[in-house]
Image (cartoon, rainbow, N blue to C red; front, side):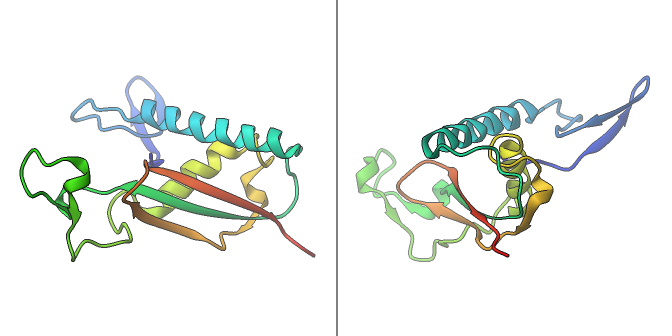
Length: 151
């Protein structure tokens, strides 16, 4: 779930709105909050399992996002083909060069981990690994790797 751009809305005062489409009244902010809570919970479980304290030092953070492949990438022998009978089209891309863009995914994930894995996201020096690709086997998600910066 990407973190969209901020929008300022004026209706009886100024409000900063995280995401949402006011024309269609579709507001994905609740999905973003849910996704962030899942990422934050996974971060908390990892910190507990590794017996680590909140990191407050220079860090390198890697993000590997997996996206659900769209149905247009799959060939179907019949409309009711079993899941195991579906095959990937030869021209289907491996990398996900589709929306949402990688920078918004990174922003949402790093905000979800702030205060859980690291004290401030300003402590992140680099993103040595950042990718967005389709996963043919598992669900959409993210694998986050955090390294302490040396020196």
